[in-house]
Image 1 (cartoon, rainbow, N blue to C red):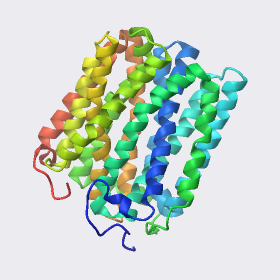
Image 2: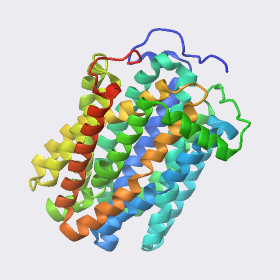
Image 3: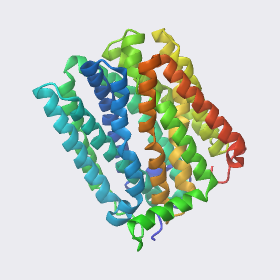
Image 4: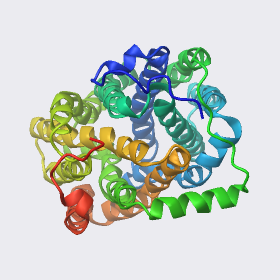
Length: 414
């Protein structure tokens, strides 16, 4: 495989921009995170207004993330078969078609719940493949040495998107209506299509000679033999099943517990993004002093603990403050989850290792089902507190039991 164009040169947070073409990939990341943040708010509010049910709000996120399990299995083989650039281009076309269809349904009459669920499944399933493919491009484009810096930049733009996006989305729902907002969401991926079409040629993963099933099995065996990647997978499962599923009930907290409308929902949803944005300098500083794996686990514990506190808050301002602090943990989780896997995996197995991350994320729908049932039976606050509390216990136990996560010292790849 040809050497990555960015494999040489100094490291530093802005060093990836010294590699020709990186800015297009970075701008594509920003574009994708931006419309995803707006769509997330629009769909949650649309479902709550349509059904009035906390269970159905949680259930829509089950449908949203259910395809991630399947995509996690086939992402590596698909990337090897078709190449990275064609896949990200096809994903942009899929966004335009799926969200454009939902916009037409909303503008021409009240859509059925199943139509919203289908669009969420197609749109977010596409994002799973897009997400994985774009991130496996990084080492090929800029080299391993700059991968963590590039992931921090990606997390930075993600944080900005999930700070501004929810607030802007909530405001636009009131100003232009949710139908026109979906139409805007459908148009934005056109920019991604233009950016990715102009990416430079990248080294392609070596086409495998095995069958698709054998490629999947070989990838799973490879990951199983690496304790660092196994730890990433297990913590990702705990966070997606127990912690991130709790965020799906934000519309319920906004309207039914804190007495807010769409703008208040946007502010609550933006708070974690703002915290992640403010916490990025801290994460960047700490990852130069601490083991990446320990920092990843600690960030996950911080976010889960703060969401337990949020669950029992009945004051809007206090809830915002707690979510901002929780966002610092989210920044560490987001920046280091893929970074550790991309650095730890060999060149030949990187696509398949990232596929296992998708598999772990794909367990999240089961958390939405559990959380929805608990919220319907016991109320949203108790459901969120129990789920996030269990996440804290699980992650702390794994950290204490695994030497690579227990050590505070910065590792050689940090």
